[in-house]
Image: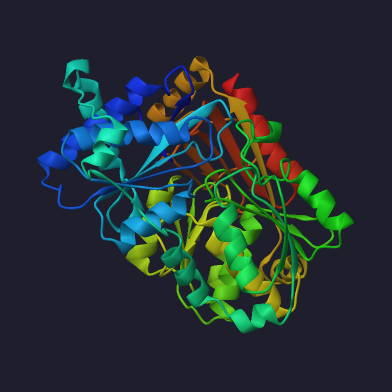
Length: 470
């Protein structure tokens, strides 16, 4: 069965990610489009630099075109934010990006994007899953790519990056950035965000040196996710080369990682806190902020200190973007490195986030580390820990039992104030610490996140869950 998680459908290449399943997705989407009378606009199809991504994009196009639909196709790989931006700019009904984002190299997948450039909401993906379950092989229609191109059903989108890049540059304080002449070491992690990143930062006169810029089906033997672990080589080179900043992005360009001058890793939680504080206090963008359930509560304390509110939503960026629109929030983000800003696309964008981060450094005259120390001294310190566990069937059953009965929890050794079962199981404590345990929506993993006053306490919360689920 094909199931869409928090970041689209993802599967192992050669096992479930293969031509028949890509064609099934294309047919199910085509059926939905025709039944809803949405044939008036083409479907844009993009792809990242993973193995088979370009071929899979073609397989999807062949099915859509065989069903009488028009397709906008790209001549080169593109990050997911570009496809979202194009759906919004051209007022399209749908876009598809072939990517498995930050998953291991053995995976690939498809992200479905809907009107206004949003991640497809649950009701859309659930309806698509129901269509897929009913679909018979003899119902799938295919028109060869060259034939579709010859018939004008496929059109190449020329210069797709221009409007995306111009919209980002229009928001930046370019003179402030140019005046500083920052030296940046950029790790594109062999992904599809290299081109827009380089254009933006060369335009604002930063010196950019790049590593891991080539296409590599195995991502240099690393997970294409900008975490503290995967960015250690970047951190070492930033320190050794006396760079002002190191920036890493994931395979499809929607997650951001930052290395401070000197080689210190700036966590995704800290990036959110820093950018919200900067946008609110320095750029004057007033309003609340949005985070998911597995993200730092320091964001709540900063918002309260600024006279604003922090809204909590389930994991999945579709929930963040929806709440951001509902509340006119300045920023929305998650502890995995994804964020968006009011007025931009309704999804994660590492290029825009990185540009704002560089502007922040240039305008404040402070390093990220210096700013975080000031923020923590004002709003309180906390330590964030996380643990990923292989998701076994017994753990799934045990967690399901907990969420169903709602009266069995690990022994934490201290009283808790409340429990939230909206997305997995999150336990809140009176001192503003928390622990959340939930199955990943993108990988076969159980994720446990905890925040407390000390690392020891946060790790104790995680150990309590691990022992409880054994």
